[in-house]
Length: 486
Image 1 (cartoon, rainbow, N blue to C red):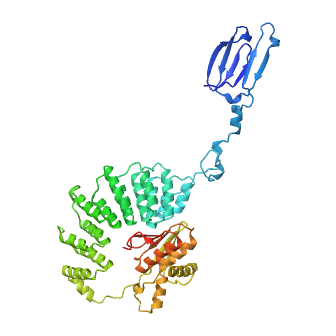
Image 2 (cartoon, rainbow, N blue to C red):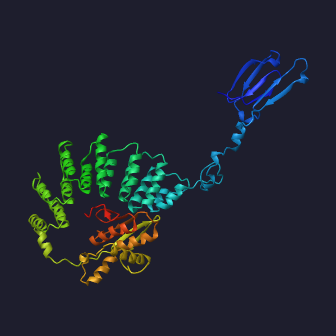
Image 3 (cartoon, rainbow, N blue to C red):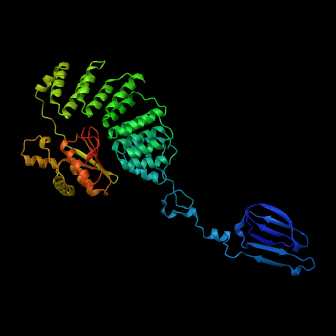
């Protein structure tokens, strides 16, 4: 309903203004039965009074008067709009100096080759230019994601994701799949799941990468749930998807589900198992300690067991301490390849000593730690304090992992200064409290460091993520996602 805003003195007519554009003809008694025209205007903000009318006498036009009536305590539309803040002026002071907007007359077009910066590894510089208004095309986003994948930088990957969400390529399946893989390799399955959930369209690779990411990061149960969701969505799994699924079963120690999915692959989807699938089902048995069932499965295989299969079972026998089974498999391997005996008997030349390297990401930069001079620096002081707290919490050094011929005290000291512990100690003093630490290690983590980092995570109350050359280890509250198997 239109509200009346004002009347204007127009002789024998009364003009009303409102939001509607219309006119109404009526009779007014003061106008001596003359026609009064009520006119509605579309621009009410120019009017002040609420109600005004004019009455004119035909005998004496000089006696015509204009009276204005205003309702008390009513705020007019002009007063409201006068005090109302202009939403277009919000946050203008926080805009970038080169932000392209009508309020920024100093805006200039920046000419920069983003692709060249990506090829040179200057991802941060490229993202800074994009923040200043430089538009990236599809190939630039591909190059940015490739660079993030090679550096395993979680923070830079998040920035690329933010720019991708605001671009016209936000719904591209391949770019989103790349992001899922990168976040999985950075041990951030929460970010990977956010990307996955926001995808308007998905293909089979999207589901497979999510399931594999859950398996590698010790969240096999989530991978199994996602596989069932994928089947309900009408996607038909392929051979690679079942490999990721068996890995998720091994991570979740889901023996019955692993056997069920293996049979489902063969019978329902008519997929012929490859050597990798047989090794995967052996991993399901071996990770849960069911070594006898693994041996029985190998004996009933329709194909002849290969060296890869026996070597996989030998590794599980060593992990679970089954020496008899390990010796038996060693004999079988010698029967398959007699050259193994001669290789073991031949004295090998001295191996080149590998330098243990650990990298930690902190504040958009990656720091590298080598076990060269571990007794200097702030990280060493922090590590000394941690060692005392760990011993109070029940930590006992396992000197079996020190292969040097030195006394017991020297072995314990050598264990304390492994490079991953130094990286963690420095990360604790250089990153905000309660934030996760991500450590990348080029060698397999030793058993003593694995036990020590579990205790560290409980002491400092932070999630410590260590990626060695085998898998991801998520240490939290004194436990590891690998369940002490790696």
